Image 1 (tube, one colour):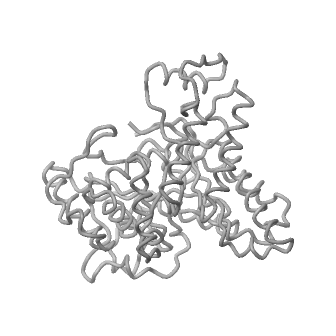
Image 2 (cartoon, helix red, strand yellow; image 1 turned 180 degrees about the horizontal axis):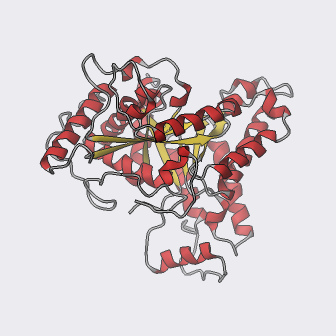
Amino acid sequence: MVSTTTNVSCPCCVFLKDDLFLPPLVAKKGEELQAEEGSTIETGVGVPSPTEALKCIQDYAQQVQEQKGLTPQSPAILLVDTHNHAHLRRERHDAYVMPTGKSQSSSAVFVVSLTLAVEPADWEDALQYAATCSTSSSSVTEDSEQSTPLQMADRTLMGLGIHPWYLSEQVQASDNDWRQRLETLIQEHPSCVVGEIGLCKMAKCARSHPEGKARGFEFQREVLQEQLTLATKYRRPVSIHCVQQHGVFLDMLKEITMQAKAEPEKPPSSFVPPTMAMHSFTGTAHHVKALLQWEATLFGEGPNDSKKKKKKKTNNQQQKDEENHAINNQPRPPLLYFGFSHIVNYDMCTSDKARRQGREAIRAVPLDRLLAESDVHHPQDVPAGTAGAIAYLASALELPIPQVAEITARNGLDFLQSHLGRPN
């Protein structure tokens, strides 16, 4: 558990408090994860349905709980969903509704989730949703008439940002009023992530911009850059939507590298947010490799960077910390993460070519950078949506579902807590 000295008064930032219980993983980070007996769904047999995957995880967690003599208050497995919009409370998705008589919730499974606002109009809703989840202590079942968000996410964080689909005329005409408001909210909520933000070639507001399509996409980049700047300034994780714009996004990142090289007295990490998650990643394995190569180059780890290059001395504490990491041969924590969801990366990708490219992209991502995302729009869809993402990853990697649940849980906590320090 990561401790912090931040004085937290708002209920939606309860995640920062020291009394947050996070169950231990079967294996710590860096150790080989082995699936215990009880994983009822084998690998290599296609992608199980989200509800089948959730049942598999629940059964596995229950067996671990019994084998280790854990109490019901000590969950055996953790699910971490790093991207959803559950605060919108839209219509449920049929694929994530458990069969009659089956419950979404289980005392053996603990859920942490991140709900992300997409425009200024729903920022307060996201904050209120996270606050409600964080202060509630009741547990209900799938069929309860008094359903609360807690049953779907035992701990909920929120993110605030402007999605490229929602760059409305109001945002364009407000002359940075949105930016001032977003900055104020980020300052007031120390656990707030920046997102969902990004670039999208399909966004209608860019394609139908009154000054032409070129200006519309230029404005997309400007708004993204402003939000990345805020995330960098306040050291917040970022969730990035990028559809058919991976080359453009990579060009923006390369500009950051040029800025870092122009100011060598500053550590490279001071030019970027602490972590960036590529949401429901739809790029190819080539894009994965290109993005990882950019990250390596930023931190002086590229093939053309001399390993014998002397580090310049500075009084900056952040630079000293990075030097200590190098001296102690400690691996640098990831900057880029890659999230995958069942609904976008599997359910909406129906062609054989798209699914093959998706599997290849997953296999190109190092295991310690994979994230599971539900990307759902209703609180009760969070568990099965997350389990569906885990099942999709497990199928592509040919690994047991419980093992991938543990891998993505550790990665998810690293991503969400990157601005506080890494979990032990």
